[in-house]
Image (tube, rainbow, N blue to C red; front, side, top):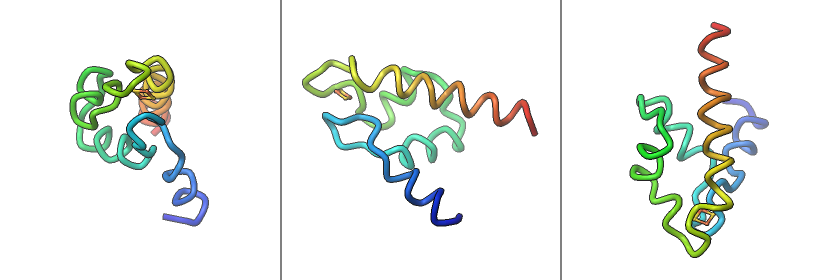
Amino acid sequence: MDQKEIIEGLKPICLCKGIKKKVFLKHLAAGIHTLEGLRKATGAGSGSCGGKRCTPRILDLIKETAEKWKAT
Ligand code: FES
């Protein structure tokens, strides 16, 4: 893992719960590929905004991950 990946992993995805991108990537790598699965595994979406801010980011991560797998 290079420095860029480490910095990228520290980006917040769920601001209400303070959950960083690396946490989602870990669960995606473990085989959790649905919004509900990731929300349940991380607690994202249960903050004061009810997931309004993080849900689009989580969906983008799922899409990005799927595209990376298709490319390999
Ligand atoms: S940002 Fe995730 S619940 Fe508000």
